[in-house]
Image: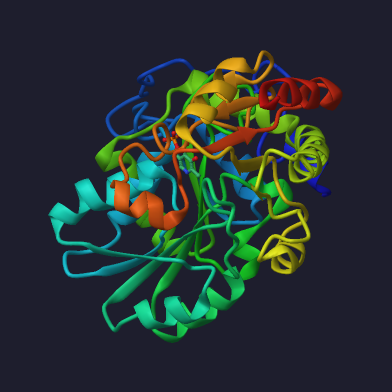
Amino acid sequence: MGFSTDCIHAGQGADEKTGAVITPIYQTSTYKQDGIGKHRGYEYGRTANPTREALERNVAALEQGKHGLAYSSGMAATDTILRLFLPGDEVVVTDNVYGGTYRLFELVLKQYGLSFKFVDTSNLSLVERALTSKTRLVFLESPTNPMLRVTDIRAVVEMARSRGALVCVDNTFMSPYLQNPLTLGADMVVHSTTKFLNGHSDMVGGIVVLNDDARAQKLRFLQNAVGAVPGPMDCWLALRGTKTLAVRMKQHEENARVLARFLAGHAKLAKVNYPGLPDHPQHELAKRQARGFGALISFDVGSLERADHVLRSVKLFTLAESLGGVESLISHPATMTHGSVPEADKNKLGVTPGLVRISVGIEDVEDLEADLDRALA
Ligand SMILES: Cc1ncc(COP(=O)(O)O)c(C=O)c1O
């Protein structure tokens, strides 16, 4: 089926018992068993839940993968992936990943014997140099947060595969509407469903999609054993969100292209980061690798004071963490998403005190442009 059809129908049909058109919220922690060892496929809510399964099938279809596994947050999904690896294993990571991913890797998982090498994965020779015989995973985010750098996923997959390492891509920024890492050869794709997949800023969740049966079984075991599972209500909200993913993403994208052009032409801004702009260093790669450029834009207003002024002056953009909702958000990466990244690393990445990031919503774009214009003036 086409993408929009899959958004609405994949993984879910009318409820067998009642005919309910929308997947019910199975708000239960346990299930009646008919005798010793006799149950109907469901024993306990952490292990399985029909609403969760519908979401898992739905997003797996959208990512063109075989298996989906939902978690209680994007970070819980990433954490569970990393539990596939053992002390001594090395992981090569995009240096510009979401700050929470950096925190999980450096401040939590490193203590358990994994080691992480943060490199600019948009530079393939740096990736090549970082790979060793101990590398088991390359963890990519493309485009990155908040600098919007793009990595050649297919090329990294080739390099990693030749060394026996897996590749996982955080596809949160693009959503499956714009990019499918599995079709580019990646082994796993991870999402914060909190963002574009849900699209309404009313739940927190994560999901992993992959094709390999044995690895999926391990992740299923870990999902139950570790227990970072989403509640049925949150799964239902994410599942309702994915129904409109295609129409939302189309509008997010259209609005973002208009605002990126507006910002790039603004006299007060020296630097605007958006892969859809022709002067973006990986513009051609972004065109080749994805079906669009997404709805995240970052720009430098020159200083912390000016950033603070802009963030306080906007009326329609809301100053808040997160992204991917129908409403436009504005944030200050240096103190918000990247608050846990050391100062020296922030400077190296370009996460300067004057950097502002916007998540472009689906409001009327004229209103969004007028709001930014007023705040920048
Ligand atoms: C790119 C990216 N990946 C992962 C996450 C973590 O997801 P969650 O907040 O659902 O744990 C975020 C959160 O902002 C993100 O932006």
